[in-house]
Amino acid sequence: MFFSILFVLSLLSFVRTSPLSKPVVKRNNGLTTTAVAASTISSDFVRPAQFSRLAYCSSGAIQTLSCGGPCDDLGAGSVTMLLVGGDGGQVPHFFVAQDATTKSIVVAHQGTNSSNPLSVINDLNFSQTPLNATLFPGVSDNVQVHEGFAETQGRTADAVLAAVQSGLASTGFSKVLVTGHSLGAAIATMDALMLNMNLGSNVQITTTTFGLPRGGNQDFANLVDSQLGGSYTFITHGNDPVPIVPPQAIGYVHSSGEVHITDNAGTAVACPGQENENCIDGTSLLDVNVGDHLGPYFSGIFMSGSACPNV
Ligand SMILES: *[C@@H]1O[C@H](CO)[C@@H](O)[C@H](O)[C@H]1NC(C)=O
Ligand SMILES: *[C@@H]1O[C@H](CO)[C@@H](O)[C@H](O)[C@H]1NC(C)=O
Ligand SMILES: *[C@@H]1O[C@H](CO)[C@@H](O)[C@H](O)[C@H]1NC(C)=O
Image 1 (cartoon, helix red, strand yellow):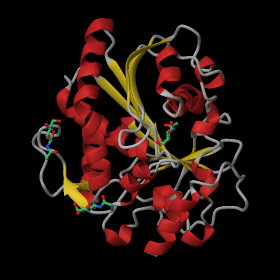
Image 2: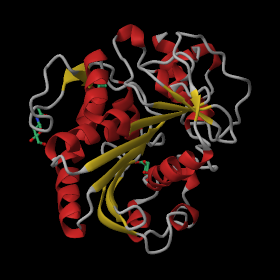
Image 3: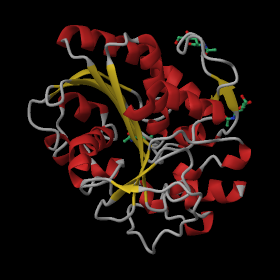
């Protein structure tokens, strides 16, 4: 099984896009799903997907919001960058921005840059470690997270927290959106926890991620549920293999909050509970489709550098 996981992840380097080839085979653990309204998709999920895609652009393009479609989709003049960083390798690109359209401070992280082996190694170290007590005060050592994800989150954590605090102060906004795709989704989840533990309770944090791998153990999944609860959504697509690794067999568990896209038209269902087998958890390793990791997410959004003009 370990070999299969390495194999499918290594395929990510080569795959651009490919359509869902066959229906997802689902088991049933009794957790029923409910349809997500198209109006909820457009009001709650499309804009986070656009921000996550923007994190795959070059730092220069992000800074000046000059990247063609991915920038134009956010609306001219709506978004102002507060902090742009990362090298696309050990530190995936990230940004903190103010978004006038939603009156929010936005934090977004790039996922694995598959042309850069360093960022893939981040993904492949499956050992677990407690959360950093400075960034996550008061959390029990029983809460264990993927070591590579924790190290990667730690490289930008102080800068992200400071930029969000100063952005909230300078704008008077009280909302924060945290988003990212793939490795960036795992970093975003830890960022959201960190922000929730370090910002005042008057700040409303919404987390919406895409193609999230499992990030920690059962205690971590429970911590995400108790801290972020109903404001935490992780969006999975079709037969994407990334959300089913690292496997539950070695102690990894997803939190609640899954929304599962079932076709390339963007139809989605809400999946109550942790590891709802009617959603991504029901995907067999034999049925995975690596192309589903990149998209499309809702309105034709693909998450990779190739979706962003090279400027
Ligand atoms: C991916 O990594 C390569 C090699 O480090 C770098 O040249 C490239 O700019 C990176 N691409 C993105 C989108 O970060
Ligand atoms: C994975 O984590 C272990 C435990 O900390 C460490 O010894 C090892 O060097 C890491 N491997 C990689 C490839 O980063
Ligand atoms: C924990 O986070 C703080 C703040 O970013 C950092 O200074 C410290 O080195 C981190 N500790 C470990 C063990 O990574």
